[in-house]
Length: 189
Image (cartoon, rainbow, N blue to C red; front, side):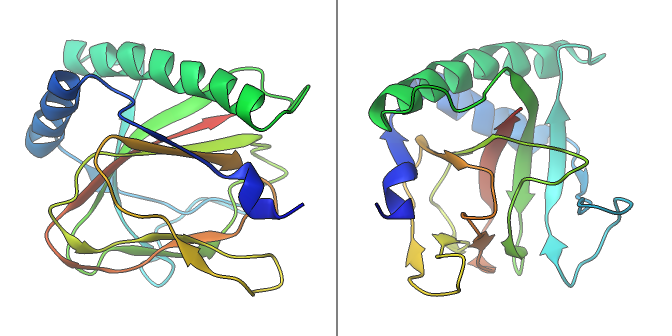
């Protein structure tokens, strides 16, 4: 079976008014430079990743941040359950959603090939919700672990992509060449 069979795409995940309000929230929010993780210390490395992040949390001092966390966790959870059924998996080890962040890729923003699972952060499932399409470049691409078979996910607002976080699913975000790319990422442990 191809690994591509375990990358699932779901469209129109949020109500459209919620999507437009989330984009409006992202446009007025303060983002910080995104660090890269892994087996060592987290650090900013613009040779690997040029992205900005807005972590969402139900413990935030911002009521808007808490609102978006609580709303989005429900949609991510619903689609993770849908994924389990669609991928015909009895148990994928998913216990709970670990983290939700809004990411902003500005002009020249990118993330090199990587996987999301580390010994220090043993993520099980990865999710990306694409928010907009009024930018150029910035395509999410997957490839086989041996470096062959690269393919791009078509950019479409309100599209969620879910896949296992392990070493079999290297992925990248190609450089944005015009505009701003917004997405929401979540990981399950």
